[in-house]
Length: 109
Image 1 (cartoon, helix red, strand yellow):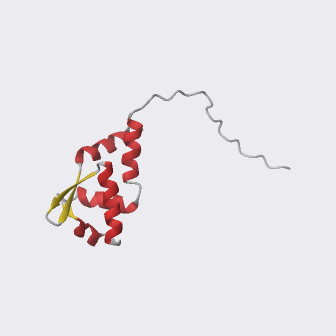
Image 2: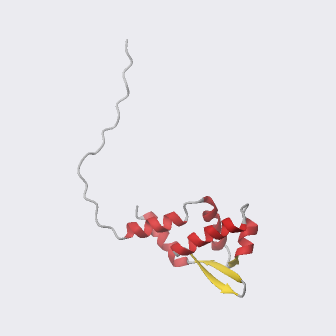
């Protein structure tokens, strides 16, 4: 007796018209910013601190300073973090409005 294959659920093939959603680009940009485990760790670190200089962030991660700097650059370009020059150091902090925006955009998926 031949075994019967389990039935696959049928896909909904109705045409869908997606709205022109301006938030899609913002979500993609912010999601890219946290799309790496090191950047997630940096964001978590900054959420729990008022501010942090690059050297302190490097001390918390098992990565070279140049690698951490590249991750910080990506986070800063997305607006997820802010950096303020303090003499020869750059002091980073989380941009709470961008973090809130990311949370809302993900919740709206």
